[in-house]
Amino acid sequence: MSDLIESLSKEFDALLKIEGAEADNHLIKAETLATIITALQSIAFLVGANDLKSSLNQRFKPTKDLKNQYTLVLGTPEKGSYAVPWGMNPLPELDLLPRNDFPSVFYGLLETVQKRSWEVLESQFGSSSLRKRVLVEILRLLPQSGDSHRITIATRNNQEPLTLSSHDHRALKLALEGESTENTVMTVTGDLIKIDFERRIVTIKYPPTGKALDCSYLPEFEDMIVTNRTGPIQVTGTFVLDDDGNPKSLSDVTKIEAIDLSPIYIQEVPLGESSRLVFKEALMIPVTLDTESSQYMVAELSELNIFAYTLNRDLLVEELENQIQFLWQNYGEAKPDELSEDAQTLRTKLRDQIRVEHHA
Image (cartoon, rainbow, N blue to C red; front, side, top):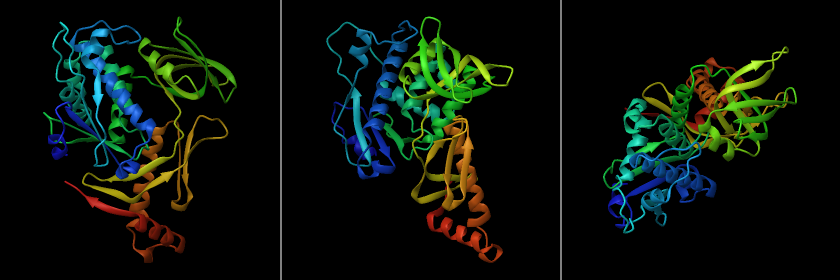
């Protein structure tokens, strides 16, 4: 990747590379690319707001000065999976404060996520609200649980490639939840009925009872609510139960997100500290909501005896990985003469699809 960096024209400062799935054929889904680039631009504006010590409103809107100094420009994609050159828009002749080297700052933010060095961020951002918004945008940029692609970043000043995957997304998500509350006790799924911006309340229809459920939220979740205003959503927070044990209201909402029922792709699974199981072709597992309550996400692949049933997508991927580890250790690594005929068939399927890789 350092060769690609050195070959960049002077208009660009960094390279964002997307690898895995269709990206390996130099293709990428428009929605995936749009999400990554939009999040990257949002992070640039938020970092700029921190640099310029701008005031932060409940709903962040970049000022004219921020747009003049922190607008990104993109180049034509290069070969090497799907690689996008990018940099900062050249500064116009305006009397503005000098900006920092955003590509290096962005590289440092992703490095912090990869190393799980959350405390470093506290010294970088003067506002905890601003820090959370930056982390939420990084979360949006990273591959989500069950995505088969990875992203790699390198800049002129940081030519050592930095690669992040859905495992980093999961770790950051847990860190954000930990920042928000120590008492996240319930997640409910339902259709968004209305949003009351003045009272900061979202109302969803809770399928098990068919009743409307009011959920109060904090100001920093407003952008997230607007983004996910169509389709089923999941809301996590503290709750009050009715006499039948069902939630009747939610307060201190810590997470609001759209339900993602796209198939889960698993390319590799950790196996101990120095090994991993790698599928020769990414395993695709369909995802549905359970038909009884519409509260649980279900993933099933009968040919490998895999069945997982959890409240959210992150837990679903984690459970699937645990089951694959179990299957490999108890069938894939077993001696054929120790297994029944059906178990031997499963062993053959596993060994046909999986190889073990060892790493330092």
